[in-house]
Length: 632
Image 1 (tube, rainbow, N blue to C red):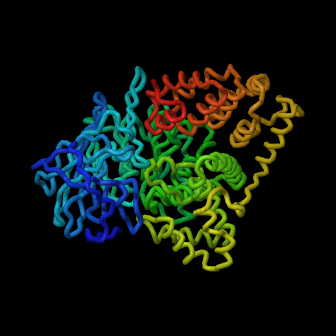
Image 2: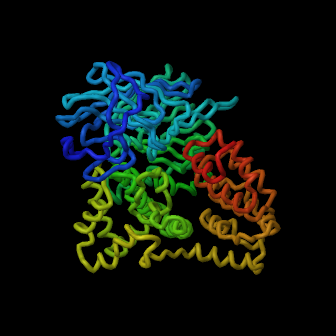
Image 3: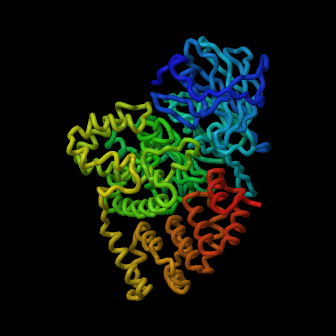
C-alpha cells in the first residue's frame, strides 16, 4: 500500500539542533545531533505536516496492544508491540507521542536505544528508536498521562459506574498510544485489555456482547486502519442486537431507548450497500456514550461512538447515524492522505448521508436537511471570510496549525454541494457508478486532493465542457461558495419561513402555529431563524403555549436555548444552565456560550463554564477556553 523509499530519496526537515534528553535508553543513552520536526512525512508523494513519523524509512503494519486501565490513577499502562517494515538502510523508526512516559523499548526482543525529542504545541514529541533494516518488531512499554487529551474519565456516582472513552481524531491517538499518527498510515491490530471487574471494554474491533467475569477482554481488527480510528471505551454497558449485523451498546438506563431509537440500523446499512457496494467491516454497532462526548458521533470502525443527545424518542435524529455509517466507505475505507484533504472524508460522507436518508425516509426529509445545512454553511462561510478566506477552500493548508482548525462546515457542506454539483452535471446514475468504482478502486487506500482530481477527470469529467461547467479550481482551491453552487428548495421549509414572517410581524397568533404537525426540522428552522430582537414576552408566548423548553429533541432544545439567550428570556436560563453542564457536545456549547458573550452576559458564561468544564472533553475545553478565556 505504501512505497518504502530509500533514505536518500526523502529525508526532509532535518536540522542540526540537539535532541532533548527527555527520553532514555534501554541499552545506552546518547545525544542525537538533530531535532525531529513534523514536516517530513511523505505518503504516496503527499506531505503530512502533523506527524513526526517517516514511513519512507520505517512504518508499522500491525499492532499487538496489551493494556491495563486504572480508573484510580486515570492512566493506561500498556505495551504496544508493532510489526514494522523498514528500508534496507534504515537506522531508526519514528513514532508520535504526547505526554507519554516511556518505560522501555525493545527491538526484536532486545533492549533498544530510544530518545524522546522536544515537545511542540499540539504535536507532542517524536519517539526515535534505533533499528536496522532487518528489524521486524518494536515493543514500547509506556503509561499515558492522567490528563491525556484523547481520554475522558467520567466519574461514577451512587447510580452509575465510572466511564472512560477515547476520541482520537484528529491527532489525539498519540496521547494514549505511541503510534505513527498520520491518516495515511494503516495497520491491523489485536488487543488484550484489563479493566475493573463489572465493566465492559469495547474497541474499534470485534467486540464482546457480554461482560467478562475477570475484566479481561480480547479484540481483533483484521482490516487495516489509521491511528485516528483507534478507539477504546470502558463502562457498565449492555448490548442489544437490532438486526442481523447491527446492534447497540448503552448503560442500562438508556439501553431500551437506544435499541428503539436505532432499530432501523439494518435499513440504513442495506440502503448504503445498495448505493456504493458491500460493507467491508462485518458488523455495524453503536455505542451510546455519556453526554460529555464532544461530537455527535465518531465513525470508529465496527463501533460508532454516538452522543445520547440524538436519542429523541421518535427516531428523528438518525441522520447523524446515517452520516457515521457513510464513513464506513468515505473515510474508513478510502481515507484522506492528510488533514489538508479532510474534505475528501467529510464532503463525501455528507453526500452519502443525504442519499441514505433520501432512500430510507424520502426526498422531502433529505431536502429539509440539506436546506438547513445550506443555511449553516452560508453563515460559516461569511464568518470565516472575515478572518481567513483561505480556510473556505476545500483543499486546506494547515501546516503549523492544529488540524482541528479544518473541521468546519467547509469540509462537510461545501464538499457536499460540490459533489451534488457533479451529480447534477453528469446525472445521478452516472455519478453513482463513478462513486461505486471509486470506492472499489481505492478500498483500504488513501487519497489526496490532487489524486482525486486526476481520477475525477479520467473517469467522470472526461468532457472539457463538463469541466468548464463545474470549475474545479473555484470549488477546490477558491474562497467562498462559487456562483454555480446547486440550489436547494424544500417546500416544507418554505412553508415554515412563511409562517415565521407572519408570526414575527404579528399577523399570526401563537396559538395558530402548526407546531404540533411540524417535524423537528421545521421546528428547528422556525426557532433558529427568529429575529435576534425577538422580545422576551414573545418567547414567553411560545413557551406557555408549546412548552418548547421541555422537548426531548436536543436539536430543537438547542435552538430554543440559543434564542432565549439572545432574547434574554430568563425563565429558560435554568434549563440552559443545566444543558451546558450536562452536555459536552461542542456543536451545542460553542453557539450557546458565544450567544452569552455577544449579549453582554460574559460573566454568566464564565460562571457556568467554570462549573461545567471538569466534565468536558479536551476537544471541547480547547474551543471554550479560546472563546471565553482560560479558567482562573
